[in-house]
Amino acid sequence: MKNIQTALSVIIATAALTASAGAAFATQAQSTTALNVRSGPGASFGVLDTLTPGENVEVNECAENGWCYIEHEGPDGWVSSTYLQPTSGGGGSSSDPDCGFSFTMTPSGPSLSIKCGDTEVATPPITPTPTPPPLGNVACFYTGANFTGSEFCHGPATLNTLDGTFNDNIASVKLHGTAKAKLCRNANMSGICKTYVNSKSNLPNAIRNKASSVRVFTNIAPVPVVPVTHSTGPINLKQTFSANLDNGNVGGAGTDIWYRAVNPAQKYIKPINGAKIAVGNKSNRGYAGCKTESFSSNQVSIWSIPVGSYVCMKTNKGRISQFRVNGYAGTTMKIGYTTWAN
Image (cartoon, rainbow, N blue to C red; front, side, top):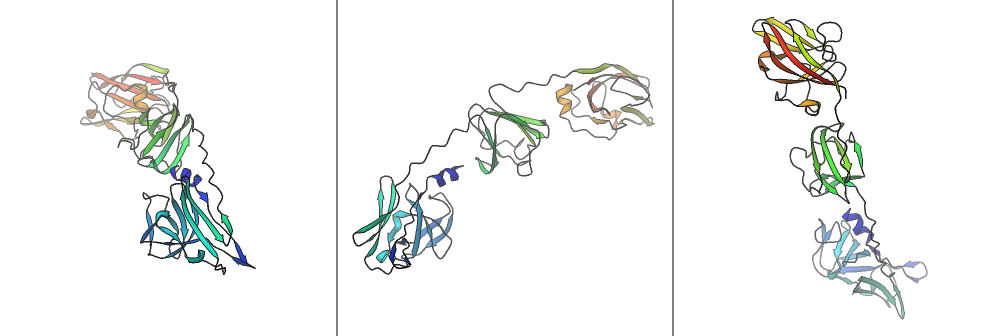
């Protein structure tokens, strides 16, 4: 965005003069020293080439800070006008020996003109750069730290997916107005999420180059999703039997977990019929915590989920569920479950 604003501040200083029939005059200058040619109008921009002392260049335009865009035999770019002087007789293609090139600095910036006899052709006056309109309440996301790299800006909205340029590739966030931003690792605002109320020039490792969905909002925080319970209660799950976490039934169609017993030492809870399981840290995570877990269709040994463990499930109907291992009566596993409608 800085480069765009700089470009808007450039004044066009190309001058042309018909010195004789069919002869065009080009505005030329020469370097007074070994002079760096840079990619932008300032010393902070990268060096593209270096002029030799006395090297002739064509001056096309100048910025208010005294830097001018030149063309020459090497890569074209920007140089400081402090180290330029007009070439003898204006240089270039004019055949009129009375023509000269005048290069001066004014309080408003550089001024270029060509004088042939008593006639002077000056460059147009500098037009003040208009102030860009405020961005409003938007968040801008960048692929580089310190607000560099590719950029996209967005007002209040939820973007459940990002395109290939920004998916897993956001490194900094700049907030304008009252905008705030929430970034999540997974699509659909799921997984680990981070919320920012101020600009962040370098996102932390937990979310930097890992965000796959974002939400932009203003002073009004996004309304949290309140989970609605679909089914809940105790289940006594006998060894080799299966249970339906959408309705609490043991056996029958649509079951989600199978208490599989290979032998007395090898017993498992196996998700079936398309259901998935996530043991996680075995704490009580509720709907919000289970929703962000990474689910698997692999079976889990009952020895890895002792009494008191909470296990997250995604039923074969796609609902988020959680059960707690309450204890055993012989080989019967006693669990308490809750499945949410959201």
